[in-house]
Image (cartoon, rainbow, N blue to C red; front, side, top):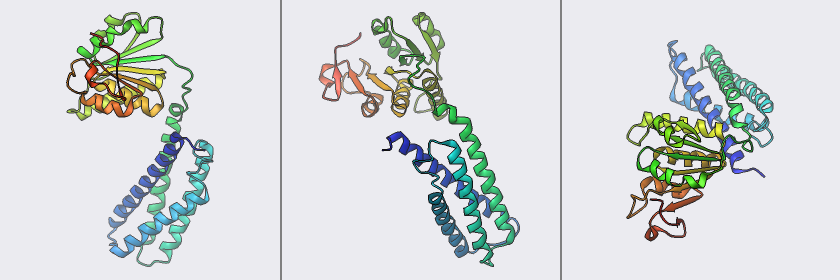
Length: 285
C-alpha cells in the first residue's frame, strides 16, 4: 500500500513532466513560427490533444509513474526514454500525415523534448541524495526555533527542559548565539509576509537546516522562522510543537492559527484560550 509521501512523489513527478512537455510544445511552436509558418487554430488544437493523449498512453505502457518505478531511479530513466521514443514516433506519424505542418516542426519539437527531459533528469540525479536522507540518523534530537525579541526570550525560559538533550537552536540574529553557548546555533535570514524575497530565502534556509539536522522534534515560540519550521517538519514527518506568545491574550496569533492546522501540539499561555486542540499548561514568563 502506498504511503502519502509516495503518492505525493508520484504526483509531483507526473505533474512536473507534464508541465515540461507543454513548455516544449510552446517552445517548438515559437521557433517554428519564426520560419514564417502560420498554424491554424484547428491544427494547434489537434496537435495539443494528440500530444497529451500520446504522452499519457506511453507513460502507462512503460509505467513511468507507477509504484514500481517511482523510487527506482534507473527504472525511471528507462521508462522515461522509452516513453519519449514512443511519444516522438507517434508525433512524427501524425505530422507526416498532416500536410499543414512543416517538416522541420518535427525536428525542432523532438530536439526540445529530448533536451528538456535530459536536463530534468540531470536535476533529479542532483537532488536524489537529499531525498534519501536517513531520518534515523540525527544531528539534533530537538530543533528549537524562534525569532529575535520576545519570541527568543520565551524560548530561553524553557531551557531547563533541554538540559542533557541534543538540541540545536535557530534564530534570525547571529549575536543570539551568545545566549546559548553550550548548544549548536544557526542563523536564518529575517523574514515576514510583507517581503516575499526575504521570505523565500528564509524558507530555503530553514528547509536546508532541517534536512541536514534531521531532528526528531521541532519546538518553536514563533514567529516566521518558527512557522516555516512547523511547515517543513510537517512535510518531512518530524514531530512539531508550537508555543504561542504570551502577548496574544485575546486570541492566537495568525501564525498560531496556521500552526494549529499543522503542528502536532499547540500550546497557549492563557487558560481561557485553551480547548481540545489548544493545550494550556501554565505560562513561561
